[in-house]
Image (cartoon, rainbow, N blue to C red; front, side):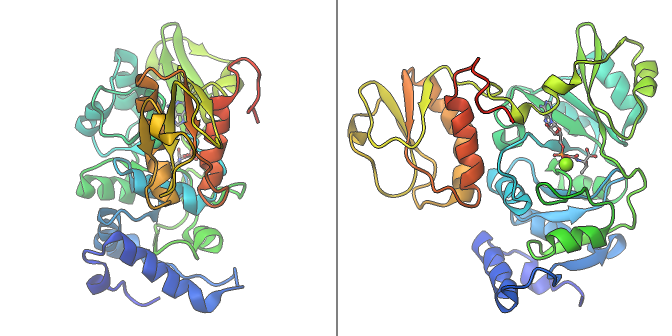
Length: 359
Ligand code: TXA
Ligand code: MG
């Protein structure tokens, strides 16, 4: 396509970005074949990618493993856009990508072994799960409310982009939910081209599979997801025992019913607020008894599902701290990001040991 229009994207506001997308989509309603995103080679894409990221938008970028769908990891609405574009029916925690150790250490607490692994494999296909640093700039939607964050330092264009942006980028693999992981810009375009403004083309991703995800534990280093770096290479560099065999159970914490468990009970789709309850509201209208809620937070006054997704984890935690026995949640439409929000609420509402909400 024609060169990226910098005039248009120099400082676009969020609503303007949406309008651009709608205008592009309109004449193509009914077709899912046509590619709408601009595709730029890495050497010509940096300024355009930065402009979109600075406006809270998302960009598909090459990394050495697979293509990623990147947005500002400190901006909840940008992260909500990632989930929206992927069409994920649930909020899995995402990897936050960093440019250097200073950025990484501002976000998470490094133990000695994790630092050794970062020294050995970064930039590269290794992701480290680490405790969040107090006051970390990572938005809670990136970690799905967990106290840990998955960090990776990629190489190449992604590295250059993060360094120039100066903030971490959340980036899951650039494929829609249930589709195969993309290792070329053309594969991203075929899958997500109608939902993106820009795909950066860096050729075929050299590694071709996702990063290896590890977590350093007191007894050794646990592989949570096998990937681009072999487990025995990791064991050698870490100098500690490799923990095998337990990966399945904790591979995808976003899928676990209990992974975010507020102390208060959660009552989704509530028709009224009962005595002693806090209220997680949504939209302009209140349910019965709202005036008597112990505490109230509104996920989005205007009923915007992106804003609601961005607020979900921090608001649940804040209402939990109010000491209410239960959090009543107003009905949230089960469309777009509403599906992932309702999935998360159902998991938070499930009895911790029931297995309800497991995949
Ligand atoms: O190579 C890669 O890792 C690619 C490129 C784009 O960097 N990214 C990628 O992201 O594969 P994604 O979102 O598709 O996979 C992230 C995985 C998920 O399985 C998620 O459960 C896990 O990382 N994860 C994220 N945060 C975690 C955490 N705090 N604890 C444990 N697992 C976590
Ligand atoms: Mg993936």
